[in-house]
Image (cartoon, rainbow, N blue to C red; front, side, top):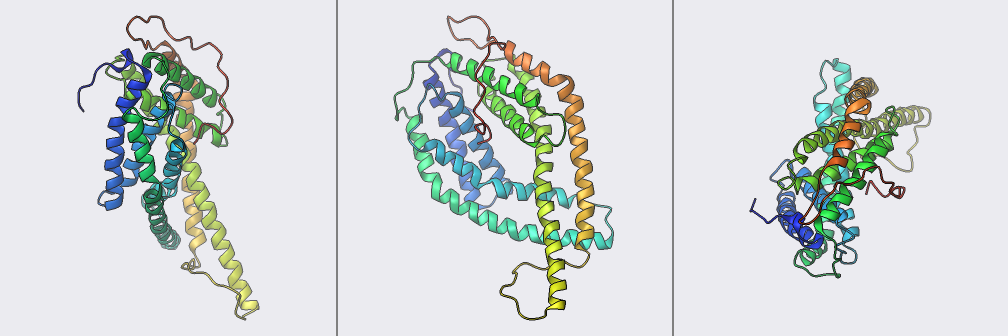
Length: 344
């Protein structure tokens, strides 16, 4: 990475533009890898690059207004990759299943074939949507990184980063405070996003904030365990759908025996084998054990101690520019984020 001046000492708009220039190069490179399909991690790389861009734009949104429609296009690009990413992770988790009987393996193999077909369709859809939306989003980012677009505000970089960290810490604390069991899906997901945004923001200023090193390690660990719990929720959705499909196929078979006349339509997917449900139920039991063990890890390591310590450390983080002093007051009340505004 090229050496750059201390961004916290300058304007918020200047800092944001400098960071976006570097992130845009990463995003374009990831986009190229996604198109060429030479890298197995291309979807992941594109998603991470996109998240970093969006996190910086969010942190500096009051100092650096965006060209009209840019935020919407970036959000669409992020959502375009969701299904491919979820299916990729789900396939990897299923591939680790072992100690299955031959009958259970037959059902798991059917599910894997089903997911491969869905993944091919999802990947093709992702590429089409990115081709459709990426160009204008890239041009908008180039415009703001070059100093174009709406007039920037007068804020200092340190003030914008300080406020973003303080707000993020409060959101993280509020969301984790609502988590008490695996049933608390929404606050778990929202806490994961809050931790991710804090991490991506602070990583850009790690050289200027030596105190942030330990905080970043903790944010990454917290993000990881929250991500595993979130993935268990997403996998459960996929498994419920597969179980429902086997039930529907069983009902169709019974109907065809009772009423063997041609129906109005058919199915193009490979029918589930007779023992498919046995394999899916084995996966469901394994998923429940996995999800609950990860949640217990979240509870023991974070909800009962480290999370509160992390929020305090974020509040004590000294983010200053030349001529500034003092630390953010984490206890100062801020307006609660709008409902549904966080996980975008």
